[in-house]
Structure formats: structure tokens, C-alpha cells
Length: 260
Ligand SMILES: C[S@@+](CC[C@H](N)C(=O)[O-])C[C@H]1O[C@@H](n2cnc3c(N)ncnc32)[C@H](O)[C@@H]1O
Image (tube, rainbow, N blue to C red; front, side, top):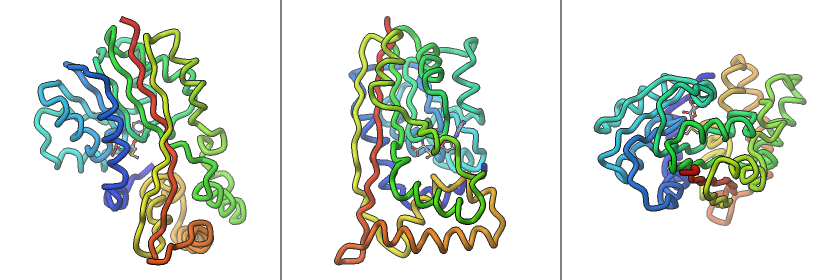
């Protein structure tokens, strides 16, 4: 799946806020070894570098085009690695980390009941798992995309993670993590992103949620899908008096401390 780093970064301020909120919610810790899973262009990694200037910091992502941007950030002493996080999590022989941090990745991956205990297994005793995941599969942004793909005869391109609602209920994360952790803090926040310019919601989802779909379409299909979505999204997210749109976006946060 090809990512478009420039499209993703168009809304960098908005997309960085939950990453910052997750860093600010960490308990007082002094981790030596940190990994940022799904580090993308390095925006979240930069926040970790500021918070933990002396830690050994690793950024992992499976999109070389995103890591190329990350490498340009000139962050001191960050080790960047192209890898699939699902395989990384399942690797029981890999090194352990004091802090596993991940902002806006795990909604792309399924089987969280297996994945989250695997992540805990890659922590040192007493280590911290800190995760933020969009939880908006039922919003018009996703449901209208599903409708359009169905109408265009492209149902096969609807991501299974959308249909299955890859991100579970808060109580499920507590259930999955409780046997392996001393404490858990779980909450949701709904951000109201104020977006300006033409087709703002379409432009937002083109930078992230639509990536797997757009990368599978030919030019004609892309033009048709974007035209349909632009019209429908403008109705679902009407502009305010000044022309801007308030785009609601719910995110689930999970912080767990591994049993020492
Ligand atoms: C929405 S971006 C978040 C980037 C960064 N964490 C931030 O806060 O700016 C999601 C990232 O997850 C990466 N990604 C998606 N699936 C992945 C996988 N299976 N393994 C590793 N990275 C993955 C994408 O390449 C993308 O860079």
C-alpha cells in the first residue's frame, strides 16, 4: 500500500495533537529503550525525542516513503527500520523495550486480542505500552466510502478492518491486557478538527483512511470515487458560517504497565 507523505502532512498540526496528548499522558518514567511503532514521517518520534532526550529510540514503519521523510527530520540518534509491525510484535526472540509507543497505527491491523498481549510480551518488566487508535469506522467518512465502493462495484476494496471494526471496545482492551499488566488507563477523546479549504474532509481521508483504496484504483476510478465522495461528504459535514468544517474524530487511548 503506497502512502503519500505530503498528503498526510497537510493536516500535520491536527494529526500531531493526539500523538502529543498520548506522550503527555505517560506516567513518570525514564525509559532507556523506546520504540515508536508505525512512526510514519517521524512526527510522533520527534515528540518522544524531546520528552526522552537520552533514550535509545527506534522508529519502525513498513512504508519506505514515510521513513524517507522521517530520515530528513535530522532527529539525533534515532534508528529507523522498515518492518511489518504485526510480524515485529509476534517475534518473541526480538529485544525488549521499556516503552512501546504507537500513534495511529493499530486500526490498520486486526486480531487485537492476539496483538496486544504480544506487544506486552515485548516490554521489559514494568515497561509501558502506550497506544492511540482512531475509532471512527461508523462515521460518515467511512460509511459513505463503503457506500460509494458498493455503488461502483468495488466492494472487494473495502478494508476488512473497516467491516470488522478492527478497534475494539475499551472494556475488551482491559480484558486482553489485564492478565499481563499491573495497571491500565483507557479513554476516548473526540477531537473536533477545524478544517478549511476545498473538500476538506476528502483531503483529510485521502492522507490516511483512503490510502489502501486509492492505491488499488486506476485513474478513472479515482476521479469517480473522489467526485462522489466530495459531494456526499459536503452534505454529511456541512460548512459553518465562515466556510470551515468541524470534523469530529474519536480516538481510543490505551496505556498499560506490564507486571514487574
Ligand atoms: C497514520 S500514520 C501515523 C504515523 C505516526 N505515528 C504519526 O503519529 O504521525 C500510520 C503509519 O502506520 C504505518 N503502517 C501501517 N501498517 C503498518 C504495518 N503493518 N507495519 C508497520 N507500519 C505500518 C503506515 O506506513 C503509516 O506511516
